[in-house]
Figure (cartoon, rainbow over the protein chains, first blue to last red):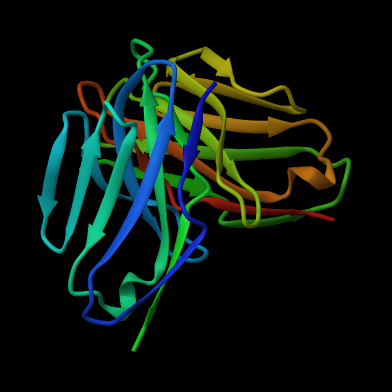
Length: 112
Length: 112
């Protein structure tokens, strides 16, 4: 079967670092994506990992371990505007279809 | 740059009424197109995807249908809405040769 697991909610303090974990089980893994979604808005693309290791992009970094079916999103120097839902999504290999399987998202609350 | 338009932004419809949501894409040719639904407090559910004009694949059985009459136009329809059709409908695209899936602004549908 296919399954994406991530924590439902997390709380962190402004200026701190937070790590959001995601585990996945898919029938033919071909990439891991992270999206940010503010309340009432569409998801926006944050990162894409297909090889093991860490991808850094400013304050956000994403890590992938394919052997463990595990990824995390690391947010540094947290700001109030980072309060949002963070969606983990795994892509199945399917030729041209590029279909993503999404987790239910982790709602991050950044407190002063 | 690639831009996705969706309309209407919000819609309130009675049970049993028809539905037509439109998605258009700019800035790319022959994209893969996707329709998702996000129910309140839940994850993104893939409804349909299309790899080309007239090519539609359905992911879940339901009373919705999709069509792609032009390369950059994707339409979601229903003949008779159900209460359970309420949700946030998102159109997404992947440009040829790219990995990232980008979302349109979404349509919030309330069925009463």
